[in-house]
Amino acid sequence: MPDIAHATIVMERNYDAAPSRVFAAWADVDARKRWSAPADDIRIEYEEANFSEGGRDVSRCIEPGNEDFIATVHYLDIRNDERIVFAEDVKHGAKRVSAALISVVLSSRGERTHLHLTMQIASFDGSNMEQGYQFGWSAALDNLAKEFA
Image (cartoon, rainbow, N blue to C red; front, side):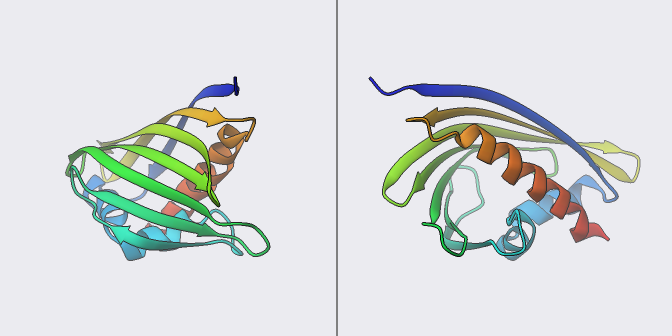
């Protein structure tokens, strides 16, 4: 029987922008393409983008010399300027490598926003995707700050 590795990762960031601006950077697919790529040589392309409760995104993480990672996101709960909860299924080429439940909570700190991100990850067949989530999301959340500079 294949192994499943489970991980819970929590990340927090503070942004120099109101929650409405931070939320808008998640809702806008062009903004998401800018900030969600974890490195300069990686790009994110969307085949579908429906940021709404019950909506679905399908994106490709494209890295030179590597097979694409394909993420299918189902938005479960969205509260404008407050929170985003979604389930994500990730394939590397044709092989499913992980599934995750991800929640983002935005809270106002004066003119700033505190972002609290929790990921509950199941990584399949020794793919070590929990490490990929740690690297990718940490870089993406750092990049998100550039949207407000």
